[in-house]
Image (cartoon, rainbow, N blue to C red; front, side, top):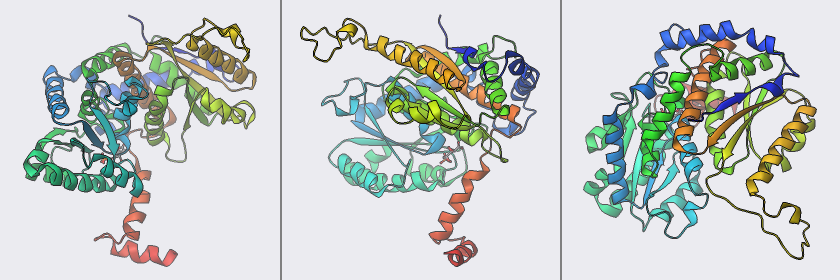
Length: 447
Ligand code: PA5
């Protein structure tokens, strides 16, 4: 079977193969720390063996709950933020018809999954509630801590609406909570209301949780095969056990760290497929929260090409030379579109007649790579055979494992996120949350 591949030949103008390989011993130590739990943040390593430990019983339970929700509801709103949102959103967008939400009947097999609680947009929530007012809907509410403000507000609004529309008893059958086994307001609420629940294990942090029920349930509700997703991740788990030269995570992690140590402070994840936009968002969270700390970290950015070649392309080609690119390239398309011939050829496009649109896209990708390498932007290339559940499972695990290795190479704890709390303290102080009286008084003086 094909697999994802990492090619680093186009970074060798900026760092040599020897400089990359010099990091192999550190990468080997990092893998050891991940497998033996001897590094910083070792309480959060549950994701390392998660694919191979996912039981058929869990998959069957998730699929049964997804089928029940899909049978009851035309729409299911997945409520969550950060790691409790981005993984499901990334996979569903990558696998879905680009216009699924606009099709009258949609794809009969698929329930429409909407998202809330990932922002505090008053108009967004108002419009969502308006959309749902005459629709049959259900809710998957996801929060590991069970106390995050954004999803809590969305859940309060939608729970009330659902109960008003279908009654408390039926609403309880349409609400599933995914949270900590014991702690948090959401756990208590779910127990009291009798909701079906799934547990987020203590040792899996939010941004590493897409292969737990956090990601798997919304993905299953959207009609995709979570067994295959886990199978793909399992394959990558097995392929990345050793720190030898065949381990793609070692190659990716050592290369990006070698570039960082040679002044390349920003990594841009580039895709040439609009379905991968949210994969870039998921990747940004994974690497941003894992590595940006202690005054260190490669800044993770993402662009959607060729769209962004007409906006960010100028900066990337000619701006400050502190960037490198990692291009995600999908080899085979699942659907074909051929450019037609036109007898008048007024647009001068007949030289492309008969070609697949993807052939043009691939030439845009190649032409851009050559131009950016000429412009001194080191380029890595990660090829994915096709966009399906198995390869996405591989890719997710590949980036997670690489992130763990890379964080240790950088010398940080990749599994905490102390900086995320700063804005929350200020927001609670500004909103005069009970328990924040001193902070409220202090912050008022600053205004
Ligand atoms: O990766 C993380 O830990 C965070 O991004 C969390 O997922 C995010 O803050 C949401 O937290 P919670 O699931 O507790 O509501």
